[in-house]
Amino acid sequence: MIPAVPVEFWRFFDFYTIGALFVVIGSVVKSHHNKNGAVLKTISQTVAYSKRSSFIFSIAMTIFFPLYYMFMWLWVGPKIYMPVGFYYLLAISAICEMIFVWVPATIGKSRKVHEAMATTVGGAMLVLPIIILVYSKYLNIIDKVSILIFIILAIILSCLFAIRKLRKYTFLFETTYCLIFLATISIIAHS
Image (cartoon, rainbow, N blue to C red):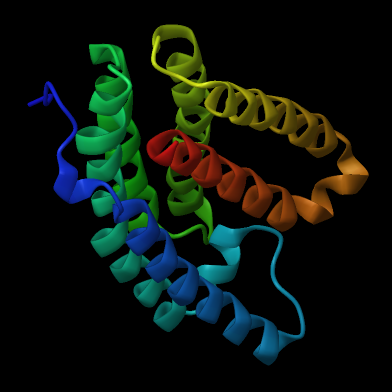
């Protein structure tokens, strides 16, 4: 079901869900840092460090990220008149997100499945703003600039990640990428 007009109820769910996830994930990461003096190489490895932190992360993501996807589906997409491909990509991303949330980034097959699903979601996070930029005729200059900034920063982060010596900063790259994506979508949703 793709609504013809934005559903007002979902208008501010980005703030609710991002705020809640920021608190939960931030506390899990801070707890890990306090116990171990540092974070691990990636966000996923850090939250999967213990069964407790992995469970807290999985529950929080299972509750709040579907609400974020609904915000994009029922508010953002209709607000800027997105094509059906936008919604297919959202659905694929949501499914992959739920898989990687419950399959921890530990070792072996679990890690491979987690990485494949997380990579798919990361790719969707790049493609969605490009779809918005290309297909929406209802963007203002701030929306367009925010999308271009996101794309430029995504390219820069990819180039930095390609440098082996800098891979120790993967946690920082991932966090930056996710936060800039969320900020870009919020700008589009509320401008």
